[in-house]
Structures are given as C-alpha cells and as structure tokens.
Length: 633
Image 1 (cartoon, rainbow, N blue to C red):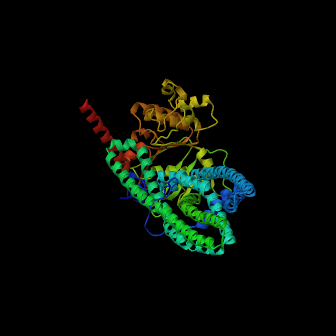
Image 2 (image 1 turned 120 degrees about the vertical axis):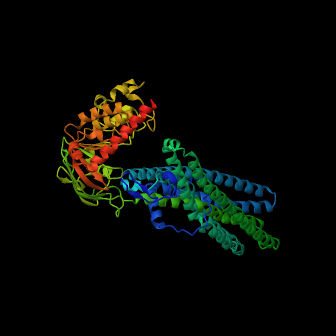
Image 3 (image 1 turned 90 degrees about the vertical axis):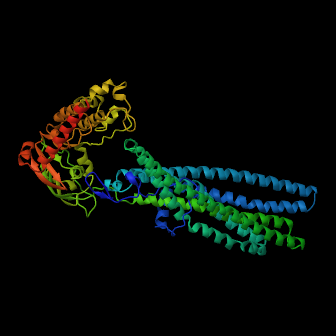
C-alpha cells in the first residue's frame, strides 16, 4: 500500500514495513565488495565522474606535480637496483681479488644509499598524497553538505535519510581511500612496468619475449575479475545503504517501535538485510582471494621459463650470471605492477561508484530563487491565496482552487480531517514548495518574486513535531534570532511562559538538551519552540497544531502566550482541537484539498455543515473520554 504524507500525498510503496528503508545506495569502507552476478552495469558517465574528481584535485596541482616527480625518481631508483645486483654478481663471479672486493663494496654502498633515498622519497610522496586526499574529501564533503542544505524538500521526501547519510560518509570515504592509496600506486606501477620492459629488452630481447608470453593470461584473468567489479560495489553500497536507512529509522522511531511491540519484526528485517551482506561478503572474499594465487601462479610460470632458458644460455656461455640475475629481478618488477594494478581495481571502482553517487546529489538542482527577485525591507503580513493548485506529485493535486485572505492582526484557523491539505498551505506560504497553479501574494507581491530567505525571515513557525538542537536552552531559543541578547532571550521565554520551568532546572538557561530533548517534557519542548518564534518577532505567525501534544494545563500557558503574540500579526493556526480556535477571526474548513466552508465559529455552527459535524463528533469523543475516565476513577 502506498505511503501517505501528512496531507495525503502518496509516496512510492517500498518493500519495507513500518516505513523502513527503500533500496538506496550506501557505501562500504575500504576493501572488496560483494560478488554480484547480475547483469553487467557500466559506468553511467565515467568521463564526467573523472572530471568531477579532477576538478577537486586541480586545486593542488602544484603539490601533485611534485608528488609525481618524486614517484618518478623513486621508481627510477627501484629500477636501478636489479641492474646493480647483476653487476655485483658478475663482480663476485670474477674472483676474490682486492679490485673485485673494492668494486663490490662500492656497489653495495651505492645500492644502500639508493634504497635509503628511495624509502625517503616514498615516505614524502605518501605523506603529501594523504594530505591532498584528506583535503580533497573534506572539500567534497563540505560542498555536498552545503548542497544538501540548499536542496528543495521534494528531494528529501523521496529518499530515506540513511541512504543520504551513506553518500555523505561511506561514499566520500571510498574516494579518500583510493586517492590516498591507489593514485600513487597506479602511477608508480606504470613507470615501473615501462622501465622494466625497457631494461629487459636492453638485457635480452629473447628472454623478454618469453616473459611477455604470460602477459595475455594475466590480462584475461584480470578482465574476468574486473568485469563484475563495478556492479559488485554498487550492489554492496546499495545493501549497506538499506542497512543504514533501517538503523537510522529504527533509532529515530525506537519509542514507536516499543510502543507497538514491533521489536521482533524490526529485528527480522535487520537480519534479512544482514544475511544478504554476509552472503555477499563470503562470495566477495572468495572471489577476490583468487586473484592473488592466480597471479602468483602466472609469476612463477614466468620465473620458471626465464630461469630455465636463461640457465641454459648461461651454461652455453651466451649470457652471464649477472645478466640472468638482473633479468629475473626485472621480470619480477614487470609482473609486480600488473598484480598491483589488478589489486587496485576494486578500490578504484569503489571510488568511481562512490563519486558517481556523490555527483548524483550535487547535480540535483538546488532551491534557487533565480535572478532579480525582490527583497522587501519589511513584511506587513497581507497574505492572499488566489486559486492555488499544488501536488507533491504533479499528477496528484493535494490542493485545488484554494483562495483565502489574511490581514495583519487577524487570525485564520485551518481545520479539516487528516490529509485535507492544511499543512500544505503552510508549506507553500513558507515556500518549502512552489505551487503548480494560481498565485500567492504577500503584501500584494507575488510570493514567487520574493526571495525565500526574505519571506522566511518574516515567518514565525511552531510545528506540531517540535525540534530542538543538542545545545543549551538559551541557544535553542536564540536560534529564532542569532543576534539576540541574553535579556531578549529571557524576555521571549517569559512571554511564552517558559521562564518558570527553565529557572527550576539545575542549570537554568544553560541546561543542555539531549539529542531528542528527552530531559524535558513534550509540553516544555513546545513552550521553547514558541519562545523561539517570539524572539524572531515575525510579521506572520504559523502555528501547526501547536497545542495538540500538550496537557490541558500547559495548553493554557501556551494559549495565553499565543494570544499576546498574535496581537498585530497575521496568524495561521492549524488545530485538531476545535475548542482552541473559537476566537479565530475566520475559520477555513478544508476537505480533500478544497475549501468547503469559511466563517466564524458561530457562523459555521449555525450552518450545520461540515464544520458542525466535525465539532459535534469531537465533542462526543471528548465526552466519552471524560466518562471513561470517571469510570476508571
């Protein structure tokens, strides 16, 4: 069954009960991915993805150039080693005289110096490459997070939060691992490979030809592994994204899970995904573990061929022992880069897959106002909806032909059954979404021509679902206006009637709230959000069922605070408890996205229409509830 938003907009159905994670793409840490034997998946746009990475790396092109020079020098030093070893063997084979010993001593000290220098250069290039990779992923992560803050709410409505978190963390970390480990390795391997072939051709073209005979076999094995590499990581990141989304939603909804006794189904759901990851991990380790032994077998085959043929030529006097020793070392250097490149394929493909997923988000168009939009210095609060049409999905309108007016100092109450479209009206006024038809005016100016930041600064919003940050109470209230002084913060709390309970806390205004603010009650949390709205001093006040989650005593505090706050302001109130909106200047009744009635409380009751039925039904429920409470007592 399709899921519904609060206003009845349908979302695509997912395979997970309880609003669990939809299939998303997460990202693993370093290491090979699971074996996925499905259809071969090609990069969506490899060129674009590589250009995306190069654009970030280009900021450090000077240091990268230095690193590549160091890699080149250290690779040349590595290539000199086998040649000097061959000379040392020939020197020892020439006898044990003083000249030979002096020459051998020089060769040994030269090799020692070169290897020490090579080790130092390797350390420096790795150190600087790690710094570049860390700075690069920091920039990518920063840009991605900033971009997420500017995306429209439609983007978050259609994606599980855990999947987005996977892209911000795991996928970016895959890029970091590849940059810090694979870039230098691949570049060094290419130089070593080319240099080894050159030296082998210089020493013995015939032995070089025999060595190259095993290369096609190595490429064939590598191609078999790499054929599945990319979809392997896409599959793993997808499953890990599912797991992250499930964990994130389970932790966020732990209270609901326990309240409905759904622990067992959630555990079974986690176990199902976990089993998929386990199976994929076993297959992936078996598959990736074959690469090393197979490549070693090819190396040993090449070694046997070179040793046998070279030994025969040495016995015949065609080649010297030193040359054979050098050639064998170069053949090892030749095969080693092939092995290293093969071992880096998984990591590189994981980085490409991760970069593609990051790029997918960065290419989503941000919430943009366009050019030449208006920035009114003040907003008075005249609001008009003129035949507004809107749907969360283009072909399924939630609001149809909605028209209403609100003036400063007046209170408009929006009532109707769940899913009627009440909250959607507020979302449109705040420009969380853009309308599909009609026009919304603020002070006679089309809302679409006013900057989002400007209109949102003029709004004070108190939502049904309170959200407080993990910070002090003072800072949570100050979030309404960051420039507010401590005295202004405390004055806002007094107006909201939150000051008494705050001062009763051990640390008062400096009390730090937990992540979900469970160290204060629901009613107290609501009072803090109202204080935050008061501090913002908005021209337009939006109360989205602000008293629906509090007890009667707290509701009285809130109602008194809101009565003072609403003076001189345009106020929109959404409330299920119709008794709280009797004094509204106009009550707009919405059903199935259309305005069906409007008027004052008394006028609507006298009409005995939709509002009358809602009010009567609620009155009966409250009476039944009071009666049941009396029976319990």
